[in-house]
Length: 125
Image 1 (cartoon, rainbow, N blue to C red):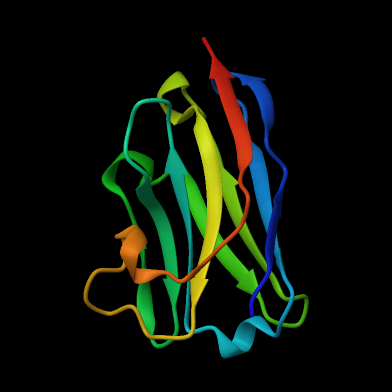
Image 2 (cartoon, rainbow, N blue to C red):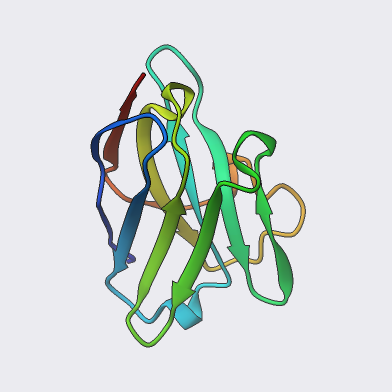
């Protein structure tokens, strides 16, 4: 069983930065696929950034150049650095992980078997 706990969300003005953290209950080096998803009210959950073993990281188009995903296996922690936030980034952000490699559909929620409870990010203009 993998437990994931997110932190770092908040209410901010457009243009500022936030850094989300996801603490895992196990050694993250054993998880070849980890990522961040978000879900805004009335919308489906969407993949934001995925970090994979032996494969390039993936970002959804709307965050490319602004968000950076990283992982520190020594700390069992996943991060999402979010720069130049805008109101369209407002959502609940979830950390996700799986023991399987996520080569085929890495941005799809169904690829991941373990989820955190989420941390809210609200960006006002």
